[in-house]
Image 1 (spheres, rainbow, N blue to C red):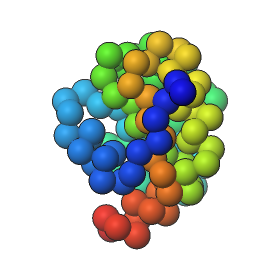
Image 2: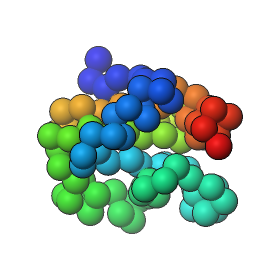
Image 3: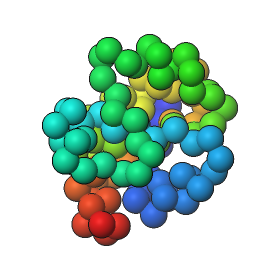
Length: 100
């Protein structure tokens, strides 16, 4: 498998690594209504810029609403050269239930 599915706890631990990139692939309105600190709202307009600027040697952690769509995004980022690409199980919903 090209990417790894991780729990909210594992994601939180990875975020403590300097330089980890956190990507929120939900729609802009959902992002504006609440997101994980320091997340970048990824969309079609900024995806290439994010790929160019992020350190591909650092973890990229991706979340969506429930942890389904982020799997495809994590796979995509792996194939763009990110060595440690992760999808958060349960997505923002699970994060909000356990962290907010």
